[in-house]
Length: 255
Ligand SMILES: [Zn+2]
Image (cartoon, rainbow, N blue to C red; front, top):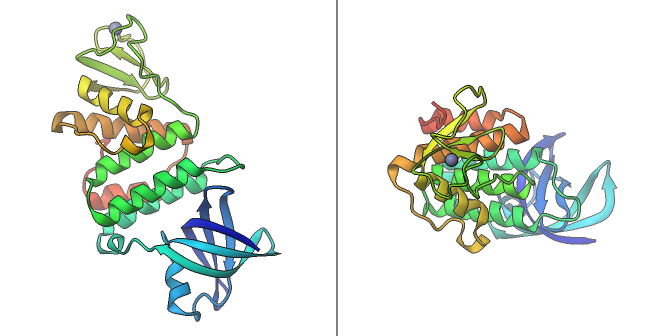
């Protein structure tokens, strides 16, 4: 028996009554689990194995193909508040898809689980603006996957905090607006100093502080556009859940 805490990232019905679920754990990355009789079992088990639930799982040693078989489960947090917002569910689905498609370290991903749990909690409690949560998730996730933007200084002249700057999506570094090569065909995102400060905060702060920052209205769109483009570029994949979120939130950060 393996006892492990995890959050349900995806589910897929199999046959009449069973269901495969993918759970993100701190110790083992993402594990595939077969829930037998998922459609007829008690509501307690049903809610603990539904999408985005965080629960304590007991998994049998016997396997079904690659999947472990669920013995028992008890919910830790169901994030009920999520269900009342279509955009919150869409965003949580996007986060799940990114994690599901990323190559996670085999020996454990406690920071990624923690990031996901924090985002689910804030989405459920509606304490943070959704676009801001999305940007924090995208940039911190990129950093956790090994794609750390260079936020130290202008690549060309060494200025620490230019008033106006451009961030290279492909290069992951920035230049003052004046230092940027005008011939460059690379994808640049122009931003004010306040957006750069937010990027620095998200990728460099201790985990406890990553969600705690204020950002003025003018600095929001460039931050959100950079976060989305930077993660997409490095994961190199289009996510249908992102397109869906953009469509229903009525605010594509790239437009
Ligand atoms: Zn410069």
